[in-house]
Length: 274
Image (tube, rainbow, N blue to C red; front, side, top):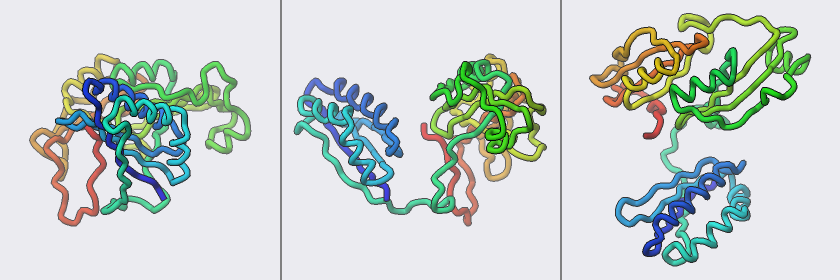
């Protein structure tokens, strides 16, 4: 069972900036822990106190977090920085939880993209969308993945090698796993009418600026932004498809006017946080 809580830390007089810096450092370290599911930090508008919303895989993961050096250093620093010398922790019990998949499934973790050149594709994704590299799965200077094992595990044709793999992230959503394959047959990028995964979509608040940046980075729009269809239509809602320099489809999307959900809708669509 997951362990969830809210921790509140209010700064002493003159310590607001120091407290914010401590929380930012803690968040960076805790998010990298294997047992952490999420760590959010929000400042109260009036008091300057910071609320930390934390969730861990289980009690063992939470206790392991408490034993980490970065957590102990944070708690020690609070003695001088925070009112009462510590944060106040309130445990949370989930209610009204959405059921949008089978019990073992949490969410889409990543989308895989095969590109001609991982470095060039990463540059485009960074220039167009501000994507950041999380880590190298298979560095470009490492020995390629080749032979019976990857061919069987990944469904590769005989002789195909995985030459470079990189994990990237764009905003509040699944990560992108970029592959470069060599010495194997390859088809052109899929069209929307083809069977299988054809594109992914990114949400923007300003779709016109996003479309301009997409083109400036080397992408090609199919047409200009257009109204959305059906229940997604609204006065400010719009979408536009474009192709990356290697031909893959990406959709740019915005729906600030909301969605006209039918009365029998079981749940709402996931939307990135602002």
